[in-house]
Length: 191
Image (cartoon, helix red, strand yellow):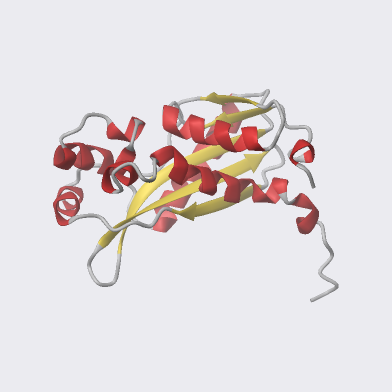
């Protein structure tokens, strides 16, 4: 399958956020599909706390965003939700997590996730006090509004990985249901 045959019939995608980093990540992935696909953003609720704890809540937030965005834009064929969260590990450490969910008009959805990166103790202390990760990173790194720019990943990797760059694989994984659709249509032969 060539890039020009990816996502046939898709002309518009709506992202469940106005965050420019999330919209840019979706635009970058769709541009690699080799088609002219319009990407928009809309503010929608995630249905989870501002700072989700755990992969399950974070993924649920991404799914809610994808579904709500699609419901707000009659011209879009796909809705995309991106949600970042944090996870407490069994050893007591805390790491980041992020999920992307793509949903189509038939209600079919697919998710992609990871962005698992350990967080420093000063950030963890703020998270435990109820501070959202973006604000905690701003306080510790003495920055402003990093979640609309570098994000935790950009700050903690000194820009080696950008927030947009970290989100792009997740969006690609979530689009795999449509990008690799021929594999989804293969009969398992009863196995």
